[in-house]
Amino acid sequence: MSATVRLTCAQALVRYLAALHTQDDDTGERVPLFGGVFAIFGHGNVAGIGEALHAHRDSIPTYRAHNEQAMAHAAIAYAKAHARRRMMAVTSSIGPGATNMVTAAALAHVNRLPLLLLPGDIFVSRAPDPVLQQLEDFQDGTVSVNDCFRPVSRYFDRIVSPAQLLTALPRAIRVLTDAALCGPVTLALPQDVQTQAFDYPASFFEPRDVHFRAPSPAADELREAGTALRDAQRPVIVAGGGVIYGRATDALRDFAQNHAIPVCETQAGKGALPWSHPLQLGPAGVCGATGANALLAEADLIIAVGTRLQDFTTGSRSLFAHVPILSINVNGYDALKGNGSQIVADAAQALPALSHAVGRYKASPAWIDRAHDAANQWRHSVDTITGARTPPPGHLAYDGEVIGAVQRSSATSARDDIVVCAAGTLPAELEKLWRTETPGGYHMEYGFSCMGYEIAGGLGVKMARPERDVIVMVGDGSYLMMNSEIATSVMLGAKLIIVVLDNRGYGCINRLQQSCGGAPFNNMLDDCLQGEHGAPHIDFAAHARALGAIAEHVADITSLEAAMVRARAADRTYLIAINTDATRTTEEGGTWWEVAVPEVSARSNVRDARAAYESALKGRQGQVKA
Image 1 (cartoon, rainbow, N blue to C red):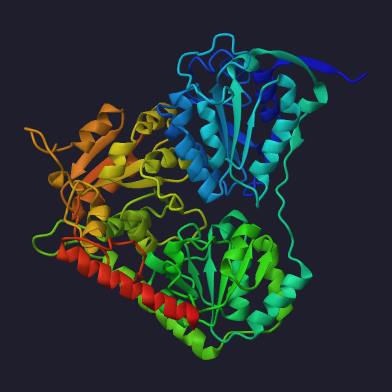
Image 2 (image 1 turned 60 degrees about the vertical axis):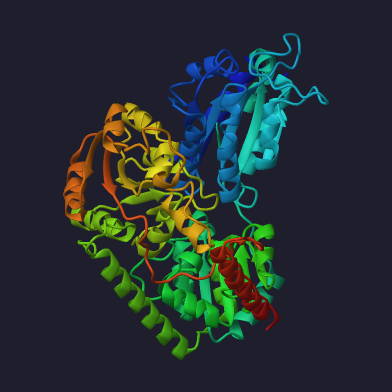
């Protein structure tokens, strides 16, 4: 008779997670799969899973956060910084604690990143129904707020019996560690079931190693892809996040060099090829480099590697709508988006196999000459933009000049920084202007473009990469949405350098509003409905100091560079605030992005914008028909 061990459901869950290990790709060491659990306790999880986490606090540490959405963002960033090879779990009480995490679940889903969500849930017994914080559905007594997680989870299960873990947990780990399925998993935990005991097989908790696998390329897909590539004279590679997650950066470099094919990158793929590489064209699309977009528009084959071809990459399907796409993606759903040839496989396996299939093939020499010229011109443009230390008369510094100052501090200190950002104007400026030579040195959440991710995400990155300086660049709007994990970073000794660019409002959307013909309205603080005291003047440095950080406000770029030296030398999280120009952006690069404009309006500016919008739509349709 096989041995059993009697545990509560919560104890079994935590013990199972603590038994899972993997191999660190960088060091080769055997490490826990789960780097820890972020927890904010309440009546739906403190007695059950809280007690279980306490018992295993030495093997799977528990971290206290200040906001449920933020702690889930930190967990997501931790997984991204580990290229999806390690991860975290998060647990909350029922009610608002759970629903606070729904946004983070959507973020993980869009970005294909692993996150284990363990929200407390209502009683299965229904005996105390309704309990505090319970949502009551008048048509379905089985519904709780945790059902909100269903559409934003790759796998959802409500654990209604302790024995259910025997099937639910292996399924959850499969989704979290499968390259094609990867995304958030939600295991809703009713509070009575958490505390119920069951005789589990002892073998269920034996230490085990988790291996990450992805499909190999199929022979017929390789043949078709090889034919498409051999017929091309002007190919361009678009490298997405899948190149980094698949540990395929070396394979990408070798493939590009062997066949003389230029490479441009998406937000998630930035860093897949070093900034200084002669075939590196820079970013693609709406936030793209001038030369990269020019070559994409003139290419006769796009090789999309590990990208889901989001509208910012494709210029809302206008940039290379007429170009055939060879898509290499571990996820068949994403591979189909190219509407051409496809290889459904891991990039690290597919690229060498395709290279072998095409033999000595190389792109046209004239095409490569053009690519080298375009890459050099873009690097020169970036040097010029970021090298500016003094803004034009009458202007504050703008984002590009701030980025230059931060980047120079990295070069001076000879450190390999990780820059973290998420939403607003900064993602466009950073994708164009930030230089990174290493995969993971650029950490951008732009799949969901979630304001508030930045500081919490920086915390997760620092927990994953404690040996590196983590620089969070964030606008004042995002900072005000979510900043509480500054206090967590101080508490955990996870030092961040936070640069707040204060343009007094949502400058990015204000410019978009006006480009669509709208009047400045409800975006900048000065354009909002106000009471008798007017718009506030926010002292971000004072606020950060109140949360335990060291902080200062600087007046200009020269002062910012000096402050970066102090920030790097500091012993804890350091915030630097600088006022920036809300009107200026980098003019170089970019392409059209579709934002619908009202068809009818009393305002002439809107009517003019609508006419321009309709003209752009006709241009795209013409490209599709070509």
